[in-house]
Length: 86
Image 1 (tube, rainbow, N blue to C red):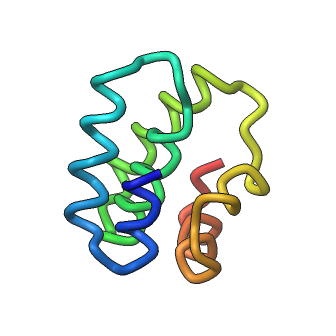
Image 2: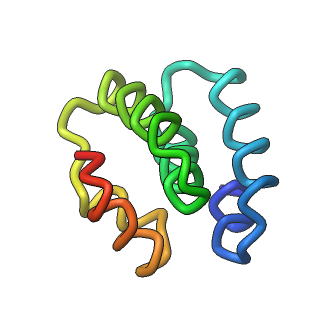
Image 3: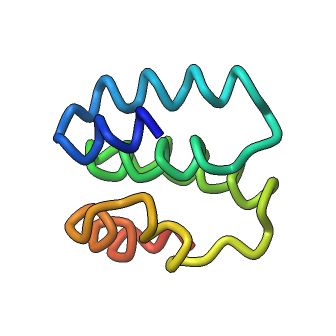
């Protein structure tokens, strides 16, 4: 949730760092991977965003754009949609 808040306030680099730490801390939850994917997408790093989404899908195969929208600002969600991460 901290990574999501940082992303919301435009602190993308910090959001990435926090999300990466959360991913390393628990390899069974999809949420930090979604936030990581959104942050990378905002940053323009689409390969990293796709990698994070792939990991999120491994953990939550039914991951939807609606799920992602819960953790992204409308502008960030628009970037994710344009990048066709799902």
